[in-house]
Image (tube, rainbow, N blue to C red; front, side, top):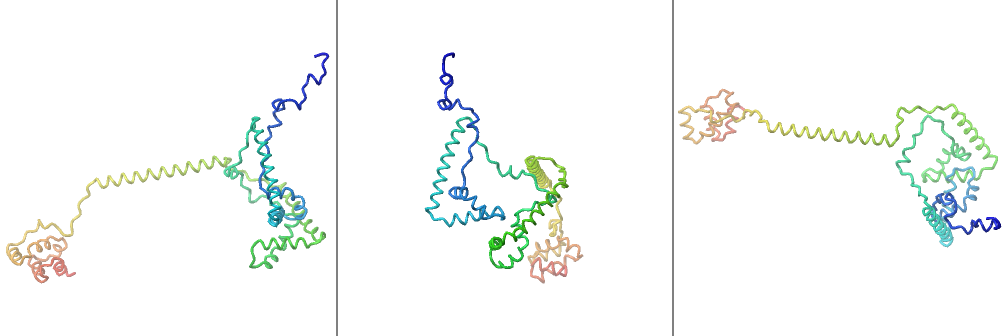
Length: 313
């Protein structure tokens, strides 16, 4: 209003409640603190470690950091542990404010999402890695392996690192030039490289679903085939099979001659004689009932020995 100081009309940003601040200020998700005491140590010492590992692979930094951290005393490690806990408490506080202001916590990618990445083309140009140190190791690896024969695999990389440190700047420059040349060749090859056209432009998730459906369909078809086979088996059992001719024949159809019957009854061999005479193989032999009774007499009424004697088996 006229006559009032502008500072009296517009409240200071400092005196405003939290709700008056722009929403975007609190909408950026705070970065999670990880790595524990070692993570704090690595973050603090990274610049000097990188300087020591200049020209070596990236892994050399973390490897050296691990060695240095293990060499610390428990008191020294406790300092970094306290730093980690303080950083974590600060992160929790920021996250609470972030969520209270309507922010949404990002979900981490699952293994399936990571696996969904496109597969690399094996014919694509290979990017040189490792810098000058990589070229140095590649050239001298056979020699290092021979020197470290019988030792753990890590002994080769340790020896290579030690030998690299012994080189002068002039000697290292040779490998720097070699690495630059390889990188130039890679960049040139990349210009003329044409990636292959994929026949199936399907998402990995769609492919997985199709494979799953195919497996389920195969299982269903297999279960149906088993059910049909079981049903057919039951039907076969239900249908009476044509009776096969018994190798023992049918004793009820045998009619003994009167004289042979009387003699067999007297000897007690009547039942054995009837059974022997009913057998198809004995009938096929053409032996008379008298021959059969004689065979029984010679084998003391035992059926199987008499049969063998008749058949000559």
